[in-house]
Image (cartoon, rainbow, N blue to C red; front, side):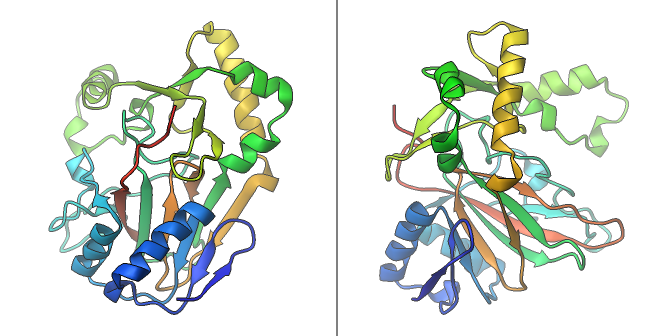
Length: 283
């Protein structure tokens, strides 16, 4: 199994069939994810069953808590799609077009994300990443001091996608009901990776809504300063998808954002979340 570093984050593996990996290769892949944060498997061709089997060798696949995102035959697969199948909507279109880490709003966030596009748009074929270990290392000392020992509030409800069954319901009632499924949680502003011991800033525009313990105006100002630094162009790595790519990354240390899909173009991606054998972070 040979690997080559990518330009800014991660590395690519070009000579492996992920549908037929050995246990030795699985161990090495896990090590590479921790070391390099993002791994790209090139030129893959898998059935849904093979994709799930690969995920099970890496760890424990997630069953996402909102069933409308599920693949109709495989609940382990989270579907982002704007393509009808037999005239029926499958999954949810236009997911993740904001900076986030998957499931930051849960008490035990998702360890790894694996993404396997089935249909790529013709014009925009990109996903964007930010290395939050690097961001934390570069964070100005005054900002580091302001978040020392702080916890952040993370909420899912503001990213809820309204569905057909929500028609004729008040927005406040929809949000209250969804908040029962995904209550707000807090996590440290700075987390320590349980394997590498690297520290990472753990915030995002997608789900982080408050600095715990600060007054609303002070919290809003600090979050704005932090996010402005995080999202600097120099921190962003752009992955341009090729047919047959599968990406696997560590949610503890990478923010990501989906690229847009121009109107009239098709896009279908299958995501499997994977829990590894470690807590999401250490104290």
